Image (cartoon, rainbow, N blue to C red; front, top):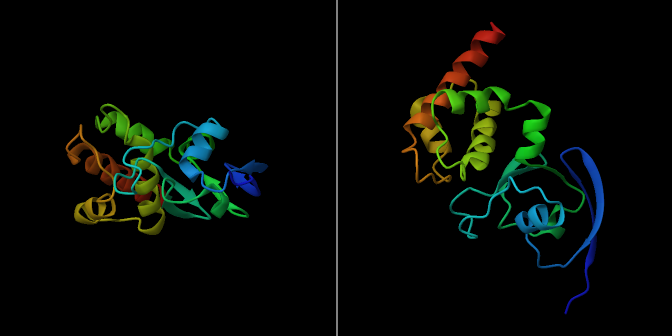
Length: 161
């Protein structure tokens, strides 16, 4: 058995130093070691997007990244984005447009669309679909999700005018 490795990282604004086994992926680390269960594990192959988190400002699949690879980095989970209020308007729009059914994919979807809206304030519906193409939803059919994202993009543009 391989000895644990000490890692230092920031998770949702909190600096942490922990010893973790070298083969623990970031999703399992967040869920099992930090009890941040909003990061869901779906396929464990990076295809479904349920485990999407931000690492140093870029979205990544937490099931494909080892926790030790997050050493020295800043990780933001759905809990951190929710607590900060950064995605409050997206969460509300998902509720308004019935864009969350079972909710399993929702945290990854919210992180992914926030990433898109941070980069592009007026994405087309096709661009929204393209950006979400790596996030699977088996319940909504995506139309309601695209509607919610388009509505938030419109509201954010109106607020900045």
